[in-house]
Length: 499
Ligand code: FRU
Image (cartoon, rainbow, N blue to C red; front, top):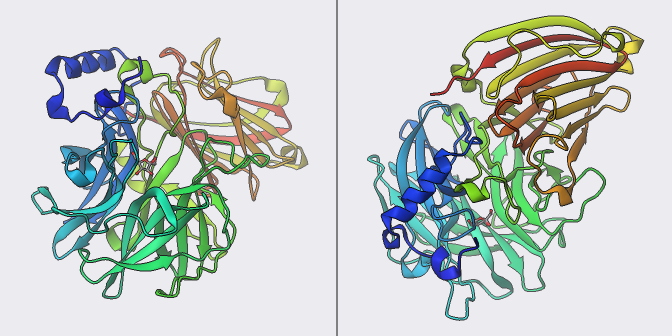
């Protein structure tokens, strides 16, 4: 049942305990709860926020609407970790409800300064006519994880030339100056990003609109992020309103990056290359990066999309965050994304296998290779010219009636993720397959399966496909086959035990 706006914009203290109890009860009956991904206890999770390495730990927040699976009053929910694997639940980080965030503490970022973690976010407000009025706000967290909001926004209102879609500040520091990039919509309804500077994170000055080579690329850019690595710069953003183009841009909204020359602000010109999608799966949006220990760059995304119905919507909760990925910017401007090595801390029982798969041999299953929550690392070799024509197929979460399929065609170098038969369907209007053309022959699939998700890392960082899937609990099989040619396979699997 859809909630009214009045119901959606209540604060937690305005809610009867029974209502939350009912949600908890619903959630407890759901068999699609993830085993090792960050997910909300009840309600809806969306963007990762405030991701930062502070005071010797990784801090991560997410957008949280506790009262249902619509988008309503958003809080920031806080977690922290020593290793990006085991997360401590720190409860609510930012609470909305002041005049400048009366309708939600929307997305934003975290940056360490003077021994504190500064959190800059968008205060969402609506007036009586339900017109949106965004403010950019600041909160400061101390080493005891106590957060206090400033009593006034640090950027009030929206400058001339932009609409009220003006949000998601992401901060960084260059020399002695702080900067933030904000996602915006121009008055003529095209998406862009704008930049402010600050000497102290409290006083912000308008620098201007980023000058890119994409003057008309979608109607809104959400969740921009900017960082530099090895003398190159990366701008991440989520353009909305991009039409599908073959296998590209097939989700409702996109999420990608452009690599270029480091900005020389206040010069706003950004000299950059093409826009690349960050992920080729069905469910990935609003990623955010943080600089970790030793200057490493780690990315976490939302394993979901706005404006799509999900099968758990009537079960009291929705969505999860992706696993953290470490980014490496290749000199030719391609971002490699690898699961952070710390994930190995989760590994439980190990199985491995070595085999040569041929079309004649039919499909194969192996002892220990089954389950609903595990890591699977497959390494491929192609023996001869026959291998170059191989068609390799891997079924996961499979049973008689369900399967999530990865299909690789060596002749075309096309890798396809097919969720047509994954289980309960979702977002079918956007298609049930996603494909990516690989630069080089498939040699590695590094797969993380959880109860209702799959993340597929390809060729040591070349591509990632992230998707939710909603199979029955007993769809556990892993089935290997080759439909043409022959493939040499080495596979390792680690069980991911429940905490
Ligand atoms: C992206 C987004 C952001 C906004 C937040 C609100 O998913 O729409 O632009 O700040 O979600 O929850």
